[in-house]
Length: 372
Image (cartoon, rainbow, N blue to C red; front, side, top):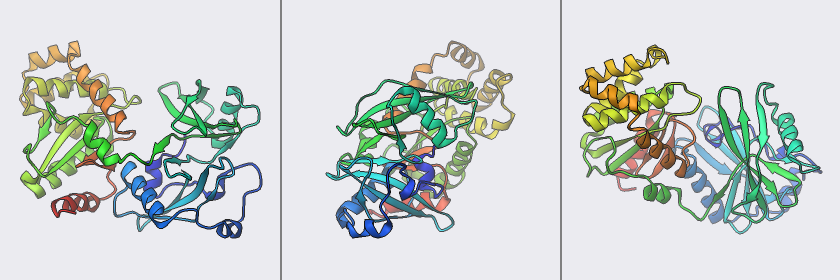
């Protein structure tokens, strides 16, 4: 329904600096006359945070335009981030607190409010983002946010097949609504990931003392995840050998009908016969297009048996969903390190999203091995 920050990072963002509705927006000349509003150090801090928080590869060029006081929230500056991957160019509207503590990545545009009621908020979101008629929107209660200038709530989008919760911010005066969360610029995303991600008793490939650790959060029903797995198995692991360890995490998405059960099966394989885990995972990705909810159990048992898992033990574990807590643990962990799209990888704590290019991953790994 709304643009994701990761999509913006890949050049598909459509937000513009003039996207704020209501009032008379200052002209570019007026904005320039107000000064940049950000020092070079502050500008670099925002760009570095955005790159690391949203997994933007080094192959994408980021530059921050002039900053000016926000019409919606005067304690924040507005600035447009420009993204260029060499093929596409895009922009992303940012709100940056003047004390450099908080960042807001505006999805779409800032929505004006008059009555500040849940009904009006839903109606204005429908109008602003032109949501499909079959999507039902509901607004939850608001609570204090990281910044005293905003309250934070949850917008639930129900398509009839799946529900999605989206964080929304309402300005303190009740006149503006933003589909975004507040990010803390004082917290290093890389260090947060390193502190949060568990590496013990997890399915892995490669030596524990490898200088590069790649943690992959994937959905077994996700086509891009299948391409990523093939890339890791056929290019990354052969290219770097014992210099790389891959740690696998389950991240089944709610809109997929069989990925959760498949994740349970993979974790069963890990508990029954750890070396079989990668073989089963590879088989599921390889046969993804042939698997459906009807033949799922038989496909999992058959592929598991070929991977070296005892069929009877796998069936018992699968039917009892014995490893569901392991999958749920991965999901909870992924949310803590802000995984909201698959595949998402962390390379020594650095976030990488999707498969923008082979070179993006090679450069990230080479930089670590080169001591950069």
